[in-house]
Image (cartoon, rainbow, N blue to C red):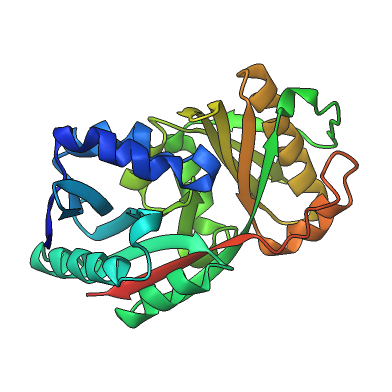
Length: 288
């Protein structure tokens, strides 16, 4: 018999088993598991069968109770194709409605048609795409590009110019596959984890990027997102984050950016010839 219940500390071994089969063992689940259990704003649902968790998904309430963020939807490979992902997604959406949230969001890979159809089946719609790129051993990248100054900035200084700029799609910031409205409170909270950098031309904000280091299965990872008005600005900030990854002794580099910069990436000597720019993320949303 299967049933949906809340995740427990005693489910650790089952979660690690599921994570082993996700992203070739590079899943963030082992590092999120404990924080979800401790977080009063996280509501993690698990499907149990024969005493073991075989699927799970987390609903995290963010933005002062306005948004439900769906993350960590996983089904053990031995139990896929049985409708468990659909059951969990329906459960999460229902939970969000019962919590009186304004909307529910999540991101997925643009080529993950099953995930896109799943979201759309519960009334979610696609809002926008961002290109993404993954690179191992960033300390081996000798390339650097610098034509304009990049300045570190605090949230309080950033807020006015960022909100007035046209850099952000729909006024939403994405970092590490997570999205939030670029509201002052959200930026301040984001600034507790990430660092912000900007480039201005004639006192006008023309590029904004953010990044941070986190632990992943393969060791420390540098995560970043770049919003830029042209190719040169994109390359400036990309070079900066490559340097930050090396400076922070990160084993991998993972970033997101406007899709049209995939062509710029493909022209760089250190980018693998296998990179075709087709891998991207899609933000989905449903207003409740």
